[in-house]
Amino acid sequence: MRDPRLTEQRNPRSREIDALDALGLVDLINAEDRRVAEAVGRERASLARGVELVEAAFRAGGRLIYVGAGTSGRLGVLDAAEMPPTYGTDPRLVRGVIAGGHQALVRAQEGAEDHPEDGAAAMDELDVTGNDFVLGIATSGTTPYVHGALARARELGAATGFLLCTPPPDELRATHDVVIAPLVGPEVITGSTRMKAGTATKLVLNTLTTGAMVRTGKVYGNLMVDLQVTCQKLQDRGERILQELLGVKRDEATGLLDRAGGSVKTALVMGRLGLDRQGARDRLAEVGGRVRQLLGPPATTGPDAEGEAP
Image (tube, rainbow, N blue to C red; front, side):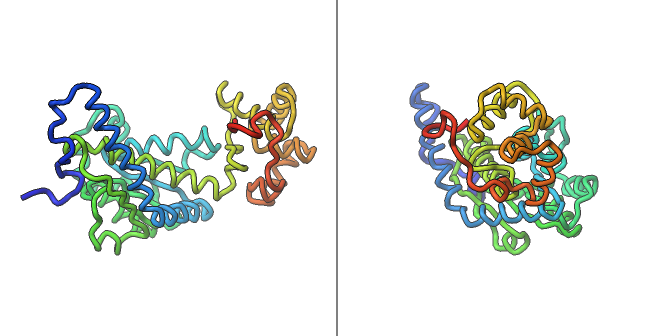
């Protein structure tokens, strides 16, 4: 009997893939990849609901916790790891949990995904509470580790969601606060969900965290003003953002950023309102960190006003 999961079905368009030359392979894979964004777009309402759930968790002092195995788990850990340098968040705000632990990030841990009790234990280890939002990622929809984690998270009062790439059963929709199911179709290589399903997963996670960060004041206009300077690349980006928004020269932007302790958002308020570091932080605290509420719409004064933003 054919496996009912969409992620395990054979793709009729790639049945002769092993007879193609290199260019034919590339064209076929690219044609299949173009289906991914459309599938994610069809889940726009569920994605918006997911953004709202993440935002609500953050505003309640809770966290976004991803749970997955294999590629799904690795993508969750990756998205979580990118939040602190991009948005200046506490590393504990977005967490990625992968079956098999951190060693599974670099080497497959066969069988780690088969134990729901381990997923449940991971939720206990993280002290999950009713303020958290836990998103299970299992493109096939069946990973026991993920289901075990979500069941325990719900017992602990957390909101839960499920991301999969096969049609979700009614029971799944009834169980969780949101179900996101981009149906990307069978993979080019049957069952290789690191491909289209993995790409869809990355798009979904990007949308959820970016949306929540925008909604909680981490972005001004379309600039990541809440980044914290921790390396030369981010120093350069921070200085260019200040040049763009304040109309100052590079050396003045450098000085502002230094006096602000490396916080672009603080430096921006200091420069715009003529405040010291603590005064800028106090004003930002009054508006919940929302720069637009404090300074109004951003003015584009730098060389990128008509073109690409920093």
